[in-house]
Amino acid sequence: MHIPYGLLSTEVSLATAAAAAPWVGWALWRVQRRYEERAVPLMGMLGAFIFAAQMVNFPVAAGTSGHLLGAALATLLLGAPAAMLVLTAVVVVQAVVFQDGAITALGANLLNMAVLGVLATRLVFSGWTRVLGTRWRAAGVLLAALVSIVVPAAACAAEIAASRLYPLPLVLGAMTGIHVLIGAAEALITLAVLRCIAAVRPELTAGLLGKGGGHAPDPVA
Image (cartoon, rainbow, N blue to C red):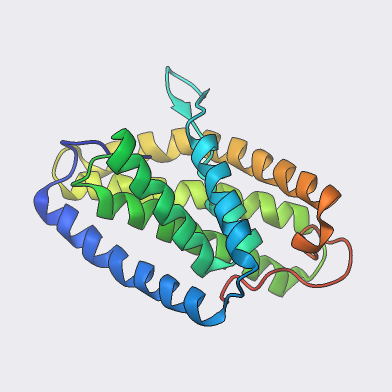
């Protein structure tokens, strides 16, 4: 998912950076205005967990590997604005310190992972709960986590195709096909982590899994 050097044209790199910047700015504004200080430690811990989890790759198929993105987990626990900031911090540190993803592709990586992954989670899970209420919430979590991987993968394919490196049908099929498998693993890991958190800190996951009192975090907050 991290786009390396040489895949994106200058025009696509600039366009994706311009698209990602307003969303990151909006997330920062919303967090400063609406989030309480007690949310900061959770953001930090979740950011550290996602950073470490992204460093662990697991084999998928045909010699490819995947890793936890964490957009769904962060969005469900923190809401969309804070999740965007957490993913932004993770992606920037990986690019600048560990050279995981090109600096020239930083805008694209932020757009795909920190913005589209979060928004996909928000739209799917909010739509699920709006239609079905508290029924089958765990299935809603699984679907949101799966989509949070496939949507950024499709966006990445479109960016590579727009850079005229490969034709869109070829790169889109390759990216989405593999990332459906990666997304399935992401979904299972996300649900497992949420269940673990619910066992020790149920107030953090109230309503997410259709159990307990309270309500699910507002992904728009």
